[in-house]
Image (cartoon, rainbow, N blue to C red; front, side, top):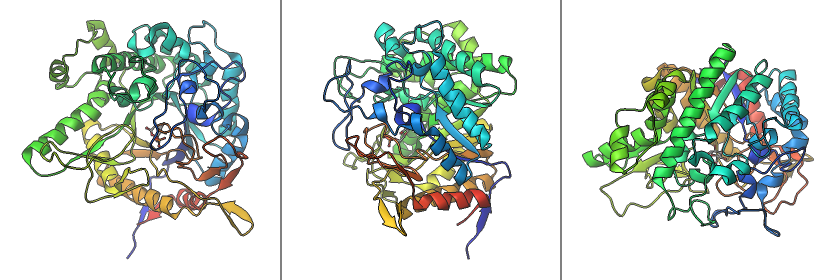
Length: 486
Ligand code: BG6
């Protein structure tokens, strides 16, 4: 017999996006170039390239993205029709400080978000703002290699104070950095850190990778986050400041004690290293050994450690797309796919067309794992299935019959409900790319996550019209019922 799971009364259902993957209008109304404006298109097999300036005849998918900048009213109306209670979006730093170094913000850039937020409020949708989602003005990268330098902290603080002061009456929930722990991964160096690691133009180049630089940059981001969290708490006590992790639910491939210990170690380094700093305000006990083992010499002062204590977040948010399986005992285990995480194939789960492992139960386990460590409110702010959708005509309307997406989301929502039943304080859910947008890792449009289809192809052609997929009405019902059947 089927069971119905109800969600708490004020549960924040919604969706999530990021400015550089959504807005387009990369050089309009005074916007400066961001790091993501210099990332070329790629695909499943071809990595994106980082170029030092805009090259002729080269595709840059983020320049136009899905043109939300000119469609935001239509997009928000569709979100409202689905019944969104919240909407997570990010602010393009280079719209506000085009080069990064200016002392005065770009008024036109601020006005865009005034208008977007007003539109959301019109439909009683609670904004959830990511201050920095995988981009910074390229000027800061050119000036001091972005987060490789301590000088980045006051630049971030200036930007964050500007937007918090401007929007705090309407925006109560803020996330300081998207997936901060991804900065510890090679792919995160440019995206999360805005850093050039060497001369190579290939995104995710592991040959020129530098663990020293990435962990140093991470420390500077921790400081920037702590400074703004502390400041915001004093500036307006009604504000809720959160962190955001790419949560990696890690399993040992076998019950061999060495595999089990390795899975525990990987959980500590991938998840708790950053989570502890942002939630507990201090580096975890295992950090020193990690630094020693990797020969890292980090610039961390006593004042820094005091600041981290002052900048503890109020809530913990994370993305969850897949689990990850690791081993040190099975040399021949086949590698699994993912954007940031590398593990081996789990024999018990299915995979998406992009090879990402599909594991709804892993979300319940992750929610319990996080909550038992931190005991603060949690939100799942990214989750979803990247798939190649086919637009079809049905009853005179264009749509996508995305039952595969409905199945994926259904199963994850059921597991969230079970976690709430377990006692986890989960307060919101914003699935990723609620409207189709540019893939971060590959630059494709073909890899779609949305409830809303955007008619744009990988080569940039298309009408940019919006169409409701089958999952649109399905999600609308879930929100209206505030419940799901298993
Ligand atoms: C997360 C990022 O890592 O994964 C998003 O926060 C990204 O920006 C999402 O788009 C999905 O990854 P991808 O590579 O499929 O776009």
